[in-house]
Structures are given as C-alpha cells and as structure tokens.
Length: 86
Image (cartoon, rainbow, N blue to C red; front, side):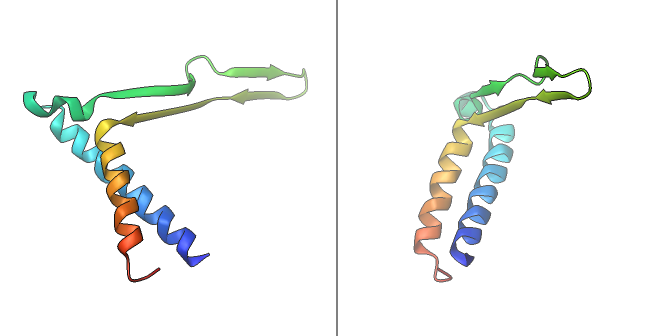
C-alpha cells in the first residue's frame, strides 16, 4: 500500500510540475511545442444529463494532457523506480 501511495504522489507531482513547465514554455517560441495539449472526455459545457423526473444526474469528465506533463510523468516513474523508499 505504501508503494502505491508513493507512486501516486510521484505521478501527481509530475503532472503539477509538467503543467507549470508547460505554462512557462508556452511563452517561449522555441519551446512552445511543450505546451501543446489535447483534451478528451465528455465536455463540461455539454455534459450527459439523465433526468428521471425525481432525480437529475449530470455526468461530465474532461482531461487535458500536454507534452510537458507526459515527459514529467515519465521522469516521475523513472525516479520512483530508483527511489530508496520502495
């Protein structure tokens, strides 16, 4: 269980650092490709709605991933495999 939580921590740190890196690199012409992202999922603007007259359920999911986040998540997995805490 400890190993799984450590891996989740490393991955979340990689996503956050990758997002910050993409934000910074998006302003630089030579590194703009690191900020390229694509969104997938059910759009929050037009979610799936199930209206049962008594209950109304709204489902929506959206995920955006950029190139910098992919690189930092790869680095996080590499650092996790080398971690002495495992």
